[in-house]
Every structure is written in C-alpha cells, then in structure tokens.
Length: 572
Image (cartoon, rainbow, N blue to C red):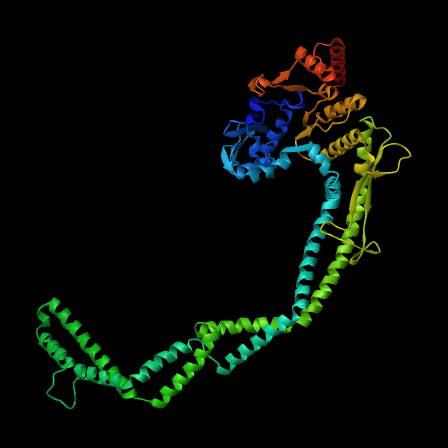
C-alpha cells in the first residue's frame, strides 16, 4: 500500500509479507493508520478528519494479488477493471471537504463495490470487531457460518417460509381490520356497475352518435347540397338545356375518339377521359341516393341526443370516453369479486398461515439441531485453541435457548418466539478454570482472557472463511508474558496457510513475524516515505528491545529479544 496525507502519515509505502507481518512503533506513531488505510481500500467510511492538516486530500493505493478465476476477479472484471499482471489495483481518495472517490483496476467505481469485494479479500479482526462479537446476534451469525451447509440449507428454506408467513399475516390483518372500508368500497362499485349496466353502452357508441346527431341536425342543408352537386355532374331534368359535367366530358371523349388511332399519346388521353366519365357517373349516382335517403327526422334526433346525454353521465363519472367507461367496469367487476370473496379469502389465508407456522416449526427444529451439533464442534475447536494460548483449563460452550411466547410457533413441543433467523438465541459461554460455572464471555473473562478468547474464536472462524488475508488490530491488548508468546506462536501457525497482518505492541508477538515493519515519526511529527521501514538484523533486535524494556541499548533487553527471535525461528 501507498499512503499519502492520511492522519500523521505524509507519504509512506507499506509492503506486507506473504506470511506473517507485524506492524510496530511507538504509541501515536501511526500504526493504526495502516488499518485505516486498508479499511478505506475495502470500502470503509471516508472521514474527512483523516485528511492530514494542510493537505487537500488523502490517497490510499493498494495492490492485491488474486487467484485467477476467483469470484472477486470476476466481479471486478464485470465492473470494467483490468488486472495488472494478476493483481488488482485499488485506489481511494478522500478530500478535506468529505468527497470520496474509488478506482478499481483503472476504472472509477462506486465505493460500495469495494465493500462487496472486501468479504472475499480481507478479514479484519480488531477491537471494534471484538466488541461486535459480544453481541448475541453476531455470535449466532458466526456459528451459522461455521456450520456451513448444515445450517444454510434449512435456514434458506426457513427464511423463505418466514417471509411468506409475514406477507400472509399482513394481508390477513389488512382484510380483517379494514372490513368496513372494504364494504364501503364494494357498495360504491356495485352502484357504478349497476349504473353502467342500466345504460348498456357499446364500445365506440359515443362517437357514432355524435356523427349521427351532426348529420340529423343539418339534414336539409346536406340534402340541398347533394342535389345541387348531382345536377352539376349529371344535369337537372327540369332544365334540359343546362350544361353539366357529364355532358361536357362525354363531348370531349367523342371528339378525341374519332382521331385516337393516329397518335398513341392522344389515345391514352382519350382513355383517361373515359375513366373520368365513369367516375363522374358513379359519384352522381351516389349523390342521388344520398339526397333521397337523407331526410329530416326530429324524433330520431331527439332520441340520439337523449342517448348521448345518458352516455355523458357515464363518461363524467367513470372515464373520458365510453371505452374508458367499459374498462372501468371490467376492473370494477374484478375488484368487486375480490372484495365479495373476503370471507373466503380470510379462510384461505388463515389456513395458509397455520400451515406456514407448522412448516416454520419443523424447519426451526432442524436449525436448532444443526446449530447444536455445530456448536459442539465450534466450542471444542475454540477450547483447543485456548489451550495453545496459555488457557489450558478454560472451556468454551454455547447456550442455545428459546423463549416461550404464546404468539409464537410450535417447535420442540413448546410455543416459542421466532424471528427471521429461527427460534434460537445463541450465546457463547466461558468457564475460565475448573469449577467455574460457564458465563457469557463478556462477564466470564478478564481483559486479557477476553482478548485470547476472541482471538481463538477468530482463528477458528477464519478456518471456515475463504479470504486469503487476515488483519488483527491489537487483538492481543491486555496480554503479556507466556500468553503473548503463545499468541505469537498461534498467529505464525495461521500464517502458514494465509497472509496475516498484526498491529501489535507486544514483542513476543512481533518476534514470530516473517517481516516486521516499524512505523516512526520524523522530528516534525509526520510519517514520511522513510518512516515505514522493514526491520532486519540489528534493527529488528533494537526495536524488540525497545518494546521489551523501552531501551534499545539495554543488554538484558537485547538478550531477551535475540532469545525471542531464536525461539520463533526454531519453530518456523
């Protein structure tokens, strides 16, 4: 990682070992900024207060090596990211004004995408996470993930049934509690449907009647116009000397017909005039029929206007035209059927609710059984880890219990409370020594014991996680002496199969690291590029001496530091 203008860090590069890397330094030197930087790369919240005073923005860049075909690679490529020689480049910028930008493989991406990838890239275990693990919900989640398919299968089925049960319960409650409103709605629908049925409108009838009313209202004018047009085209019997269009066209046709044989062009014109004569005759005939059929009918006009008034009453209430009125009627009839079927629907929903409750009870029992079996294995594994962390007599167990609730579901012969994850309350218990009763870990462990219990839980839990990197942020707080050596030894063992990064103040832990990084400030209080150093040989002995005794040149501390390093090398 390269870190610029973040907290006390001005510009520094952090190179992590593939195995176990320990990050050390004086209090306030900026060790925690390493954790913060990694958190930003993984989509963590951008706090403008992190930007170094005087700088416009903080920038963190990281290079993460990935296995080809990994789901994180697929998701990154879907977002348009490109790999750099098998590695993924991530960049996060935080401005002093609070704006945040993220880049993945050279492409600008939403910060949320980094958070999506985080679960598959790095598992962060720190003081905040430790407090989170004290919550019962987190303990249940940890147990479920440890159990794997034995729990995830029935849990998925339970969750689906639970969602359906909640939906059925909401619908049933709505029908019952809103019965009066629904009855009023049904009455209004019946009134409207009866009103439409009484008129019996046809689709398009309003348009047809409007056209007929227009025609009947101007019948005399239309008839006179049609008669005049007919006379102009075909002649007026009362005026035999008059000239009409048909006579003129016929005369033109006769004049050309006599000479058409002499010129094909003229013959074509003669044929077109003949066609005009035929068309004139057809139109004249239709005008004669129109004029004879059309007559004023006041009674029919009155009937049409009355029908239009009835249709207008419907369109004023139920739609802008008769088509919309008919559509409202169809929808209203369907809704009325639904409302009238409430009693039947209540019976159906009640039966479905009871069936789903019984199904949930069966699935909840499966979940309880699977969790109980996984809890025994999980507790045994954590207990074994505690033995290697200088707590040989400590015993960890799980309390899996249910709460009686008359409004709950039937499970295991009792009516118990239930939720989206089942009926179980899961709590991690610790008996720190023989004869001590198991108590919740928050109450049954001292500060140092709690750190070791959490580390043991995290290490066991990490065995079920596919992520390649684990970050422990001073999870060894409150521990010293032999227990600290055991923690270092255990982390070194974990680093044989995964990358492990530890921010620590304990020399016993740092001595077991494959690489030790020292974060130190310059005289002006900042951490520069040279402020994050890989310690080797004499430099590492001096830093371990400082961590042991606060004095780099103490002969006793140096001897102890060299002994720690020798012990760690002998076991690697």
